[in-house]
Amino acid sequence: MFLPFRFAAFGTLLFLITAPTVMAQSMAALESSLREHPSLEVFALRAVASRERATAAGGLPDLEVGLGINNFPISDPGFDRYLPTNKAIGVRQTFPSKAGREARSAGAEHNAVYLESMREARFALLRSELISLLHERERIEQQGELAHQREKLYQELLQTIAAQVDAGQPVVYRLSQVALEDTGEDRVLADLTAAKSRVDARFIDLLGYVPDTAPPDVVVANWSGDPTQFHAVRIARNSAQIAAAGVDEAEAAWKPSWGAELVYKQREAGNGDPGSTFDGDDWVSGRVTFTVPLWASGSQDPALRAAQADEAAAQAEVMAVARAARANFSELAARRTAGLENIHSLNDKTRMFKDQLEALMTVYESGEGSYADLLDAELAILFLRAELAEERSQVAAATARMNALLVTP
Image (cartoon, rainbow, N blue to C red):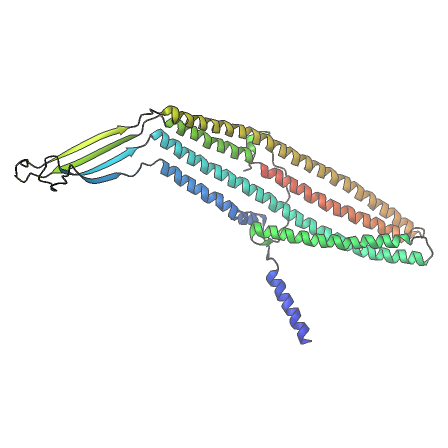
């Protein structure tokens, strides 16, 4: 007795270690956990980096400091032998075009906004998947319970048909048919078990744990018909803003970049030798530089045309994305409508079979009906309820996906 007990204890421990952790959470808590998903953190950190680049783009280059000597004689080294020889220290500062710096800064800021819009769209998609998974798990649980109920009815039906065969009724063909249908329930349960494992795996990917949360009611968000309400269109518009900043930067290339330089020079007094009788002195040199777009036809012009083409492509992408988003929304809406119609039809059929079951029960209680007919009607109702669970899950998934397409408060 001791050895089997140890095996049982080990099996229980192994199950506890490998089974996914189930946590009771509210929907708000699940959304809070979802906000911490690594894929969302990627967008957030990249947006921070882009804003830092926007700040850096508006700054000036480092100040250049130069130390040197001028006109130093090689044949007779020294600072007191030759009149032009001097020591120098200078500073130089360049001032790139302000318009160009502002354009680059604006482009980086637009990129940060673009990444944030990507993050919100990704969160909406993950949230819709989370809602769909909660409804999917409920569907699996309902269909599993219904499958177990059908198994019991099939066993009862097999016994009833066997009794009818023993009584001489010509229903022997039903035995193999019902036995085959009963075997199909085993496959249904196996498929549901596999589906539950897949759902739990997706929960762990989304949240890090398996939640014990009831699926929320899903209501279609209001869409005014404005395509800018779609996440995809907002992302495309933000991308177009980046391209527009590229045009501004290309246009700014025609404007001059400035520079300023100041050099302090020191000359030592001559040593008194012939040709080296001069006084020491200090003096300052300065100059201002600026760029001239002399080669614009080979540099600035093609760069501007490229930026303008990028902007035009981005604007065309906005239109293409708007059409695709509208079509996707309409497709999901049609799928949802079809699911609702199927639910209505299945409810009507379920009511019809329930009425039929009541009628059969009345006939059976009068002593004229067959108990097998009652079981067949109950099985039909259970199959319809399983289909209803499937359709409700599909409608919830389509509704959640529709909402994920829209920018909602």
